[in-house]
Length: 283
Image (cartoon, rainbow, N blue to C red; front, top):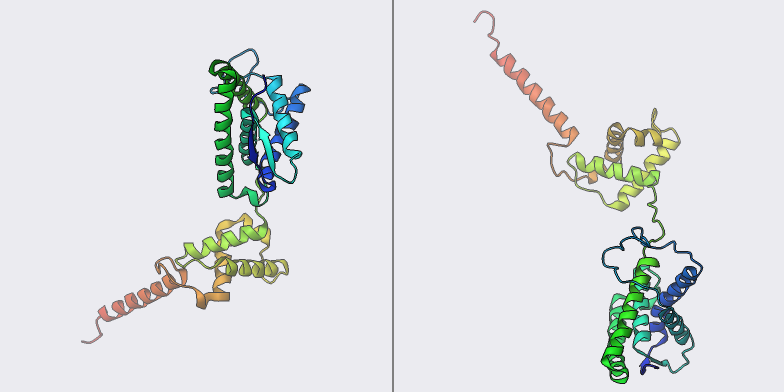
């Protein structure tokens, strides 16, 4: 028995947030029909226990066709932006919206969080209206069975089509980024206030250019990176030479040149004390 529908307005911007998820489901369902399930849950076994939270999942051909028909309906909307959808077509649209956001398929202005929340609320309002109309039309018990079939199909989608994503590879830092990080660390570790990123980037490019052209004897870029302790000392001295007057002291106990000056003054003071304590001959 056909389910009653509700007339809902879906503008182009809102459809652009729903259709990518429906296209995603359509592609994965086509793969599943060919027996290809590369995105299945890694703990799933056909004859053994199913992953927690996915018990009772079951593929349903009618529900799969409903997802595809919903996609086709949204593509065929005219200039009026109005369309009639039943409760499960609205549920499929809401599912596609969630999957599109989860898989980062949504692009453009519709991807703003506020608009997505508004769209979710809009779909939910009409889904509840369609749910009540369907329950009155076919009876509460029959409608409950249809809901169970849909929920089992959604679980099947999640366990078989939406589990394994493309691997995300972390890009290794460039040599310039490594030199910047070493220089910033060298400055703060030696009692100086942090320097602006723009200034650190400028200094890093200058020192790399100097290393490449041999203006710092005995050093190379790879040598600085491979020996962090001595490399940071070199970078600190280079930065001190270039912008030493801009450095702000945070902890003078860690500033090497201040510590050296203090130790020199202390040595002179001790030497003066020794001389003062030596008795004068003939007194």
